[in-house]
Length: 156
Image 1: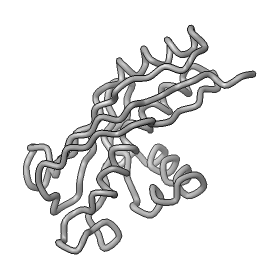
Image 2 (image 1 turned 90 degrees about the vertical axis):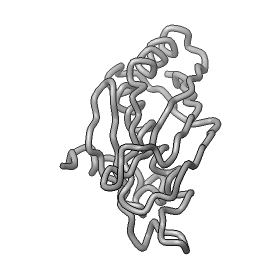
Image 3 (image 1 turned 135 degrees about the vertical axis):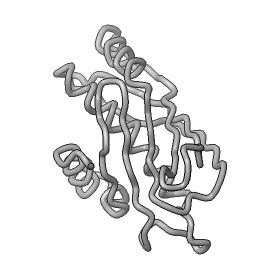
Image 4 (image 1 turned 135 degrees about the horizontal axis):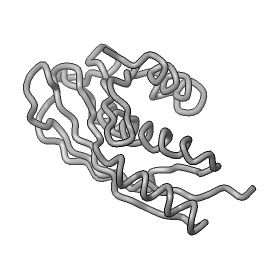
């Protein structure tokens, strides 16, 4: 079951800031300080010519899972911190032919990065890991991602 408030936030953010996120209609299934799970449905919007999920959509799902967790942890600090992914590594393992769940379990490391950013006032970076699975098919990953999260406190 999707978390309605978090899903609405992600989609509204997408509609105004990153329209591709809004277009692929992600749903937040789980969001805590330790773990995020975001689902992207396999639909006419997200399929490639082979009937599996398009690799650009897979990248968008990974961005959403790592990004929403980072945004949650940044909000808890009550500081203005800019967030960007500055590089991206993807490993596509098999064709996803059903809805894809993007799982990020790096919450503790992201929380430490946020605190380090606030303490140093400098730009800080961290490799955030996201695994994509199609739970209707199996728990085997269909893709793995490492996104370099880069944070910096905004000047007051």
